[in-house]
Image (cartoon, rainbow, N blue to C red; front, top):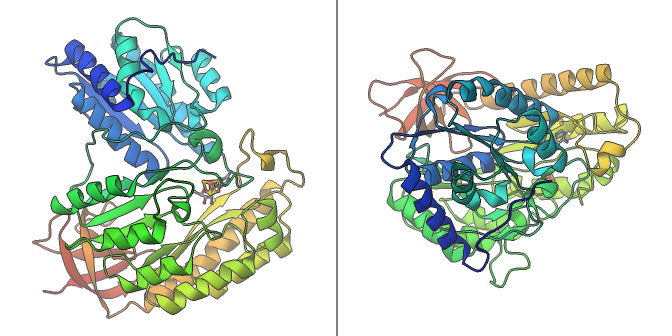
Length: 470
Ligand code: 5AD
Ligand code: SF4
């Protein structure tokens, strides 16, 4: 593997980065060069893409949404399931014609996919027009990599370190002027047996609370209303750090900032979710009444094989406490269907748990084997027809539950954030409730980012409909 040589190790990282950004600017600045960033995957990737756009702008590129007119294309990939990787590879394949049309075009692939050695190797050999790859933790190196390539260096494929640094002060171009992502930590130490994330995002590293508070304060001062704190397992924020601040402390600190805004966070790991955290949420109106708590399976035996670190009983205990302290909170979860060895009985336990909890939203995924994870070597793979059948039964049940929960919203008024025109309902605006439910409404005056009071007049399993009330 052709690893990148860090040519200026003795200098602190951020200054290094700026120097390279200046160097790229001296090559491309004033030439009307454009950068196109394509994002796959989770909110962490969306947040990373906003930093990529920020660095591209700093280096003299304007941001375009048309790959055909770009001089620099960055594909930010996901590796969590095979489907996501296939989609990214197919898109990278399509960019070959862009390079054919414009020889000086630079194409970079980043994120989780090329952080796996076999994928980096595949890109190197099968996609010779890709100029360089880098991982999520090497984001700050983008100016250096681009400068080296523009100056004629060989193609580079970086496999991230296990414990990369936390780099502050990377510029950002945010997609929205009312919703913002704030990464509070990076990486994951949990090694759930099915999951590729710990291998591609490295070990857990938390940002300093002072830096997070400064970023959140600035966002609120700029008028951001919906701020989502991001981490693979926010509940282990601050662990092993030289400051004394756990996630509940951080939330309390951020929620004490004055202003008209809501804080969201994801993702919580049930094994580390504390009563203290739920108490802090219950005390503070600035923290959205929403809890996403990935269950993965309702069978304690499957949870053990998944290396999740909790049983179904322990999960229910924490969920009951959430329901007691935050009775109006929207609840959501992730479920993996057909993990190796999942029996009909195991699967029924998942359905029973869904019936018991009554989540507003369930994100369900058919298990996808990931190269290099322990689960990929497990026996008793569930046959395809059983997988499909279980998925259908789970979706049917959840549709029924969501339908009856949403029906309870009829006649109630919610304060939603207007997110612009609905893509599927012509003439309607799409709003999001504090609990992240979609509420469609008509209005002559509401603009993106406005708070609007909407009374629910009709409900479906996956959306609410209503009228603006002044
Ligand atoms: N197969 C299917 N789903 C997965 N997830 C993570 N890894 C896999 C996999 N190998 C799901 C989990 C996680 C969500 C983000 O993606 O449910 O919570
Ligand atoms: Fe993957 Fe588990 Fe870490 Fe989540 S907590 S990122 S599922 S290893």
